[in-house]
Image (cartoon, rainbow, N blue to C red; front, side):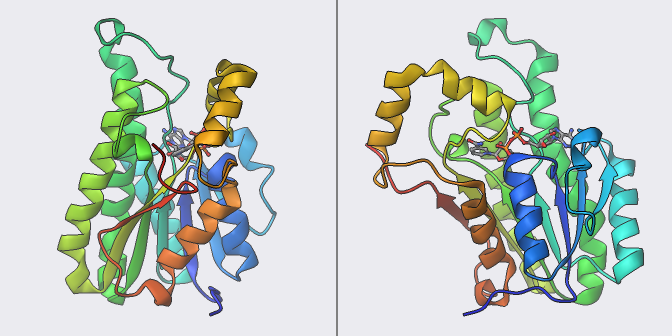
Length: 250
Ligand SMILES: NC(=O)c1ccc[n+]([C@@H]2O[C@H](COP(=O)([O-])OP(=O)(O)OC[C@H]3O[C@@H](n4cnc5c(N)ncnc54)[C@H](O)[C@@H]3O)[C@@H](O)[C@H]2O)c1
């Protein structure tokens, strides 16, 4: 089985660092034309020069639509859409009674409305092409309690899964598959590095020992799962969430 994407256009939202930048790098290595966006404009400079990059806030519906239109205009159609943007948006863990509505919505809007904006913009072209693959980077936080302790994050990640299943049901008839990948914890960005440091040495050791594989995952391992779900080998997989976590924990 060889997974390659020559002549395919892949759009990655939330691509500047961590999991997003690994997804960009692996699709590029597999021959895709990659379009990447992020709110962290300066960090996009570090991506491979072959990547088309734009500073886009995924909560800005018209900016997302313009980004997708640009990718479609240059290459014909978006074949693969990967929504990575979101995370915890720099928010701290707090008791529920102290969480402000603004903090709550910052997380929800990037993770959930960002995905809605991207899908809404890309689906008409995918329908015209009668094919497309959409992958949302969700989290075990949306399937169980969140290690972050951030209520809005757990809610947003669960909402992504509801969205993914509903879209899969709606769009399958047009040849469009919609799935999610749920990565295990990895200290890939300032927010997750802070969380990791907060565990201390003993907490870090305990987290690793609880994992059946006795290690943390690597960003490229998330990319490989995304690439499988975006490939023809996953052509009849629709509406599913693939945990990439090293296995179940007690
Ligand atoms: N690292 C982990 O442990 C882990 C585990 C499970 C799921 N995830 C999910 O994986 C995804 C990527 O996480 P990560 O670990 O690479 O770090 P991250 O959470 O920092 O990455 C999020 C990316 O999205 C971008 N982003 C945030 N808000 C945006 C907006 N409004 N518009 C455009 N871009 C925006 C950020 O700049 C960043 O590049 C996130 O959705 C996160 O929830 C991460």
